[in-house]
Length: 517
Image (cartoon, rainbow, N blue to C red; front, side, top):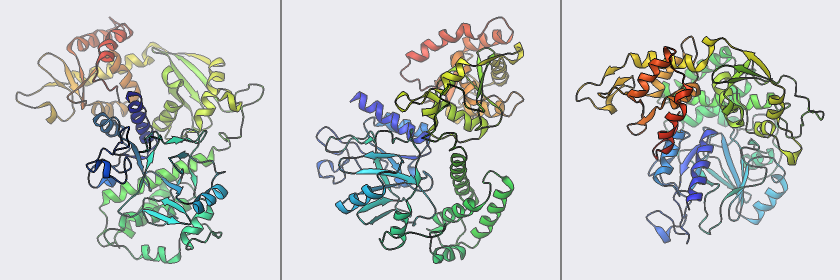
């Protein structure tokens, strides 16, 4: 059971990292009994949310929130909520008619797909062309769109079915091997034409009445879905969704449209919905722009030549850094050795450093796939890397140590009687000389400074310094001994590497350590 629990929380965290809204579901025991209050009488054992009322609003892609859910209930099944915020929908069959349709029209489509006890679930990209409904049953297919107030979710791998079968991704069709594609035209036709699988002509598959209803304003209960539909249509039509001037024009239009609603959405919610849809469109456009680089059918040069636009430089800093050049982003992207080994971490840094979305398909090209005759691009680059020297003042560890020192040097004593939980995240000093602070609070000042310190860089240095989780993981604490050693590092009397192994020992042995942000 311990192994199953580890797989469940890992999968939940991975889904959250994709931007999918994760839902904790009830679990089932070895005999198939649901963990909910109904137990043996439950008709949806292990399939329904375990987040209380309004689970639709509690579904989250925050990895800390998701991790905490499975800490509380390690064997809980994993669900994902569908709709515009997750950016996906689910199509499965529930009859022989539906299976026949799926076998004919969907089986050859390369999109994330997994099997349950009796069916195959295929994930497709959410679109504003879809009806604003939670679930549609038509032609033997069950299409979970996630629209309306009710919402929709499905049980995801590696959850356990009440029969004892585990949900699992089909070979080569996990979300780390391919990305959701657009809903097939035949399915859209069925949705809009009463179940008839006729072709749909034109880009806009919504009926004219749909847009007329939105244009005249909507009432409470339909405003969010109307905005998502409208913004989705508008940003798909603009030439460049990365152009701030074009986006500003769309945003101004959306603001004016919102004034026709009764009542209008609050500005904060209006903006949040707008930015979410823009982000999805930017990701879609980026994927299309670079499909020629990362096509499933493409191969690296047969002679082992590195593809055009790729180059790797090792910087002689402490610790050593790597600068990766790619046709996907402008300029070089600096990576640690640990990040260089991980396609997932490179994708994360592409977002943080370059604001570029790189899809899950990147992994096969970076790490290689001998079965598909795809060599490792990482291995090719490391073999051919260049070396670039760096002056002492550019040694990042020292730069970051100085920034940390400047931040905690201003720490003020925690006032008598004041609770840690009530602090505002700034550095405070405890009676024993230790300093505590919120990670994000000090990092925000550093990232905007002249050294532009990245989140993972600060996290790495704090780990080497021996920073500990403090007060239910809300804060980081630097022990007094490490504060003193930090002063020596800044003065050049000691090096950070001298304390890395010493600091790592108590953290690694602590059962409460959760790593760093």
